[in-house]
Length: 174
Image (cartoon, rainbow, N blue to C red; front, side, top):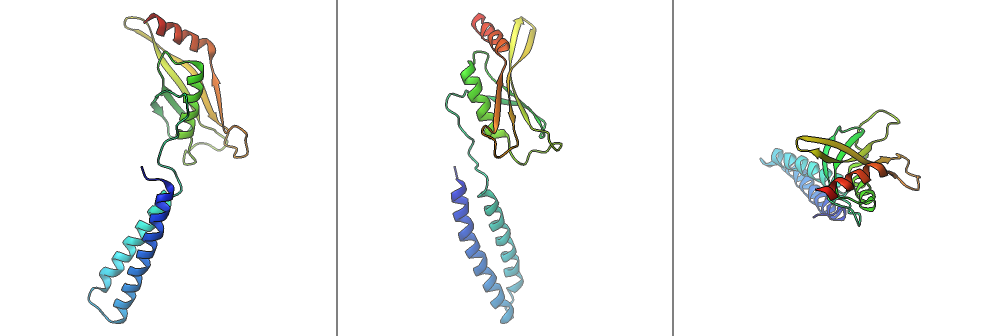
């Protein structure tokens, strides 16, 4: 998978190519070549590609991996402050903390919209089947962004031990 460094290098080369095409377009105008307006279009398109590559060099495209985390599925994302992820019933407290930390690193982005002062929350949930046909959603914990760059822990993870024990007991029964 391409890294931000790769995109920065591609930006440099594409910028050089854009300048070369712009110089060629300038020559085309000086010498009244028939292809001059096509070269202007190619220069503009190259400039757009250069800007796009430059933008991709800021944000890593590969998701963060936290040791000890388990796979999760994002089941709800409002685009603002509420995110819900689904985790397996048999998850342990250590795995839940690592999974919430990983989800926070991957889902808390500066581009999230929301009201001023509102920080996004990721809630981890699982489904417990009490009996056939009856299921309960159990929220095991949450991760909250502090929105403070100078904070020691940018993501605060909270685990609900009672609900985690309930999910573990249900996993052991099934």
